[in-house]
Length: 285
Image 1: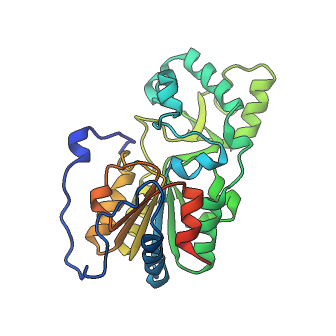
Image 2: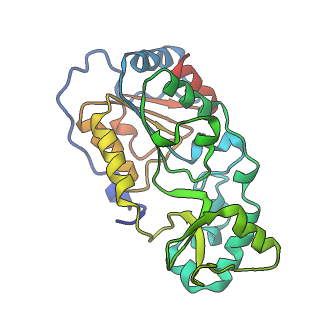
């Protein structure tokens, strides 16, 4: 199973609805540019009631920390399509020039200077309230752990930029060690154990996901009573499947994002706005 983007027909496919009491819920509600206080309070009530909250985060939770998203108006791939090409495994493995450019990009990655924002810290609060079951993240920046989230509860389905891996022998080492080699003049540093190609320990397009991570995310979705999808376009599969899986299992779905997502039609509530502003209001203290 590899990381993919669905085409439009796949995104718009309908999903079966579970049978449940929905008399007190706000279906497919868009709070507009500034989230409505009443809707925020309703969602906060759902958080208070829930016992097994699963959170899925995407790039939108880290933009307020200075890390750009990928497909937004100012996204990395919107402004520079060549950067998306470097995220494709086949190009990275076959073209030394792409690898050299990728190493230079890693030297300047915003993750090295970014700090967690109020959105990240709100999820730590959720954990301390003993509400958080699992935090599934598409992000590779490590800011959830930096904010104080328990690493045992975090599932990094797209890996982490804070390590490198050898594509031949699977050895993992700290990213900082590889970057020191690049600064010292190695434009495309090979694995010191076997001479193989090194890559950040992130999941590139066309690269197999870690089955245990996907299984763990799916299991969490099936036991959730509330799923918060935060800062994700919900357009990258298979991780986006946790939303319909949780819905079918009877969980309420709340989407918090700055723009429309591919699964707004499945949500019990949709909150639009800054994640670092919205999430603390929803989570409470």
